[in-house]
Length: 204
Image (tube, rainbow, N blue to C red):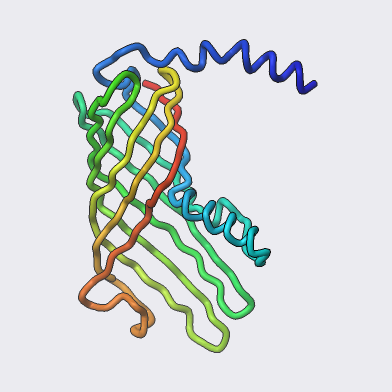
């Protein structure tokens, strides 16, 4: 069975890796994909804990910043970008969950065949809710904006891989139930992407 699977993969590899020729812009106007926004830091932590034989959470979806993304070309190099990142955590004494939403403009500059440099600037919204034993629920609504830097490589016209160096927002809480929270009236930074990887499906 393994030999048969290997033969199929080898047979399809030339079609998968033919790229999208040498187009000035990506062949299709839209794309949707999944990204592990903080995959590299998470992987580094997993390896470190394995070496030291420490216990750790191996939930890759929860701990590596799974993001759902959508891009749509507006004109030439300029794209609209949007996405959201659900997150949650839990312990015997504290449980929390929330969602981060970002939307804005993205540019796709061609570097070489099939490869693009993708800087963007996004508005950012974060909602979180936490519950701790013997305390009132802690809720936060945070709004900000900031840049994101990434790269994209097309394996074919339909499939592309992304690598995001960082996505960062600076903002302020517009609602905060717990005034003791670390986010003060002067605002704070939120890093929602850092050394992440992803895969996109492109379409019209």
